[in-house]
Image (cartoon, rainbow, N blue to C red; front, top):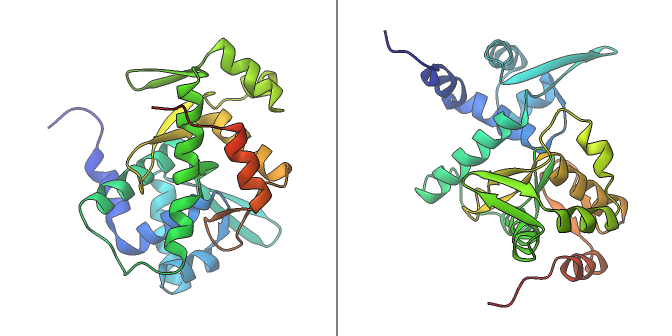
Length: 229
């Protein structure tokens, strides 16, 4: 018997088309009911319930009951990171499920990746922070520098509160559309929250799209300039 983690079981759970649709629907970070996920997967409620039980048993999902309904969400940022990486691998290999639609450019520009900003604007956020030495990357790890901490605090993010949470402050996440890293972790989540609180951006209901207003995009570009080559 081979030793080590059983990646075949996890791959099999994700590999079913209906379960893959369920998981990607939860990449918005919003918890959904079994009925909502059945619609996303294109299967009956009974079939969706069977898939959800398998995903829950495989610890890819978490479930919580609120009132008469049971809500499902991704189990962790690790699950979201794996899904985003698989999306990038599939896109890079040309494995696309449908022709690009009207939402495709908007998804590529800015979208929610579990709980942080991804897409072109997520890449710009990361590149700007890195280029100004507010972040440092060593191997596969990313850290906030002292200068970065000062910038983040001035931007209105409470680093003290973030430090008390269980999630790592900074994480790298591979962007599926750009195949480059964007910022995840508690700081990535906090930045997205600040953009929404400031009225710069809003999430499009029923979608992963993050829509920046004209004023918000101008403010974003001013706050996160790219260094000249």
